[in-house]
Length: 185
Image 1: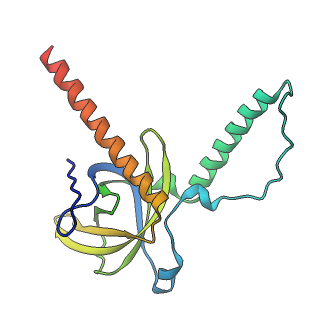
Image 2: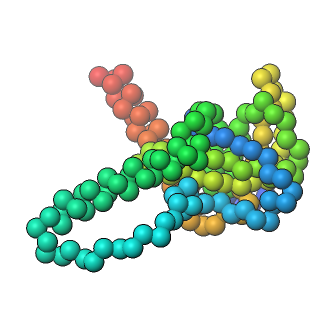
C-alpha cells in the first residue's frame, strides 16, 4: 500500500501510494531537456483580459460573481480538453513526491527524460505536467515497468503531489475502517 521513511540512502523520503490515475508519458527530445519545468495545466492558459471595475455594492454583484466562476470552470475544462488531459488512459502507478513507477508498453533507457501528464483528483483536482528522469527499467509480462524520479519540479507542484498522496492514504484508511466496522456489525 504505502511506505514512508524520513531517512535517505536506500529508503524513501516521501510517502508513496499505489493508485489508478489518468496518465500519459512521452519521451522528450534532447533539445527540450533544459527548457522544461513541471507546471499545473491552467498555468499555460493565461489570457490578457482587462479586469472590470469592482462592483462592491451593485445589486447584481453576487450573480456576476457566480457567472464569472462558471465561466472560469468552462474555460478550464476546454483548456484541459485541448491539451489532451481528458483522453489520458487510466494507469496503475506508485506515486510519491519524489517520483513514480508505472507500466509501459514502450521501453525507455536509463537517463531518458519523460514528460508525464496526469490528473490528480480527490478533494482538489489538479492537471499536471511533470518531468522526470528514468532511473530504472524492468521487464514484465505485458511490457515494462518504468521508475521515474521527478526533475525540474518546484515545491508547489511537489506539494500538490504530496498532498494528493496524503489525502489518498487517509481516504484508504477511512474506507478500511468503515468496511471493518460494517463487517463487525
